[in-house]
Image (cartoon, rainbow, N blue to C red; front, side, top):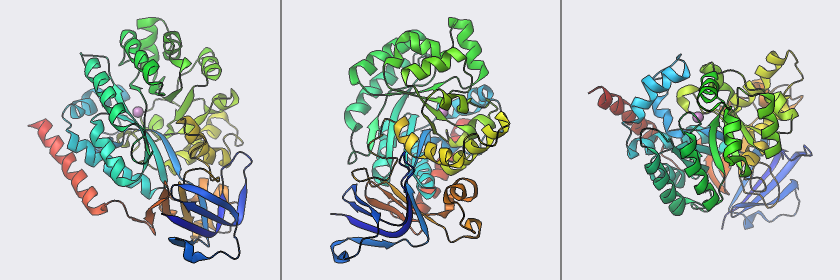
Amino acid sequence: MNKIRIKNCHILTMEEDRKQIQEGEITIEKDKITYIGNVRDNIDERDYTRVIDAKGHACLPGFINTHTHAAMTLFRGFADDLPLMTWLENKIWPLEDNLTGEDVYWGTLLSILEMIKSGTSTFNDMYFFMDDMAEAVRESGIRAVLSRGLIGLEGKGEKGLKETDEFISKWHNSCEGRLKAMLGPHAPYTCPPDFLKEVIKKVDHYKLPVHIHLAETSFEIEHCREAYNRTPMEIMEDLGFFKHPVIAAHCVHLSQNDIEIMANRGVKVSHNPGSNLKLASGIAPVPDLIEAGIEVSLGTDGAASNNNLDLLEEARLAALIHKAQKDDPTVIPAYKALEMATRHGAEGLFLGGETGVLKEGYKGDVILINLDKPHFYPQHDLVAHIVYSAQSSDVETVIINGEIVMENREVKSLDEEKVMFNAEKKAFDLIKRKEA
Ligand code: NI
């Protein structure tokens, strides 16, 4: 059985009381944290399978990416600087129509490799070829919440629902509990109300949370107004979705009534500042959402609209853009941005009590950041340093579910060369196939 001791590190527990331990120790046994506190004397280290002396390191919970489409790393840098609908309709959807399961497998592995190397221990994803995605999660050791992306147009609805059933029965709660399932209707502009009614029957049946894109662009708002005389939030509310746990990605264009609905119903928000900026979708009213008591976490969205999966960069963007927009430098302070990347991420995925903070009884999802770098000196304020100065490559060690998946920047669970080589080959082959 795994028994890991990490000692002499500066621990940021990310608990609500903001507890930090200057010279701390964490013990992980099997998949759980069994001790966190000051370094203990009189410990017989022969009882441990690993002892890590983490002097000069910060120790945090792994970052949680609450909205992405992992396999879209295959399209990174393929189509940039376009509006969302042009980008989707002319570039991305035609390629996605040609994807195979093997493409999705290698694309997902590439993104998992990138996420582990930047300190992400959990991600939330909506896509297709679920067996291939789940296989990548199983092999890599990462924690994931996956949903089969559902589109209700062009007769695609039935197949998606059938594959949702298959996916949930085969993979929910698998991989030592690392993999969980949600229901994944794509968005109100790709899922007409009649189809959403079919989806909600599944939600009632499985009692699983829902992952959806909502209120991303002004196009979507206009579409919903014209077709249904409702905002996307009002459509979801009227159909009864918000009686269930829902995480909504983006939430850029919201009315006051929308925000009230979300607050009353406990809708969770995945804020994707990088993607929203790049596609010029707008800036989500995150300070107002937080003010209304809504839980806001961070997502990268797919790598084709970001173009990386670096959650630390999203935390920094979240801490920066709202200050400029509100003309107020006190908005989204560093600690709040870091909470959005950790504890609020876990709450957003309905994994609160399991991950997102360092606490006894929680999962052993832990990262170590090497502080012995010029950009961390002088060490006045560790939280400010991590949000405003750190680079994701400062993350040196990543432990997920009690397993060391990266140590000294070397990923243990995957063959890095092979993943990069095969993912690139699949991406180039896909474009050739489409052009042929
Ligand atoms: Ni998305």
